[in-house]
Length: 338
Ligand code: UFG
Image (cartoon, rainbow, N blue to C red; front, side, top):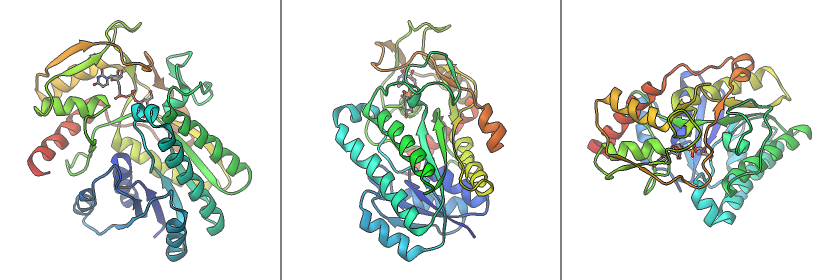
């Protein structure tokens, strides 16, 4: 079986990708330092997959740890690199933490890939690289704007590091620009585990629904959108996970390739639409209020995902309602079992 290293494999998107790799016949190996994930997720994964998963507690910024792993493991088919800090607000307060962690881990990996002749890299980038876009729908050709946060800047710089390394012949790469991942595995066994107060809409909302938080604040209702709230492209995490498998398969067929893909549904939904849909599919009434705009939020953005469809043969299959149902199943599981 082809061994695929999944850095950050215990995290939200990483853990779902491990499941899809196994489903597609790969052998995922998780590298994670559990700085923003919970070791119990590994047991959950093993239960879901009914098999053991190889896991190494490794910090990708520590080159020697990583080098030892590469040496001992051998025969690595590819790397899917998720391990990174991702809190936008924290990155503004502590930019060095973000630049150090997100960039050094990537550079260490690329150096070791080159030395060990591992060619295939799938990288998790973000629609944040488009900044405040000129058009609501963005294609991969839309300009990357100045990053609104150090976090966003690490994604932009990472993309450049990968492109330059591929030009130098060091690797083949698929850079995936995620839109807004939400939901959880339909089994209810894995999902998002935010530390402390969630920053993102869906984990905050599910905690309000579960009675862990009092009220959801909708950040602004006077944006220039049909209902005044921001518009995003919410993608089910299982669809997103599958895109990584397709990207890997594309790299296998196209040695030396390096390209960037939007991974979204191609549909925009407002915050109000999402909240109303959550209430409807789960038959729950949410305590909510309208608050101030959150600084740095763009009013509306969603993906043109045509390129991923054409080249990666990938398309989102699940709806926002599916994701909101699965997110609630996971939250309920957490409440009863965690
Ligand atoms: N929102 C609320 N209330 C909340 C949380 C969020 O109304 O309690 C709104 C936001 O204002 C925004 C929408 O819900 O309109 C989505 O917000 P999220 O925080 O869930 O997601 P973002 O679109 O802000 O974040 C995404 C990615 C990040 C990326 C960022 C760049 O998840 O990785 O876009 O803008 F950095």
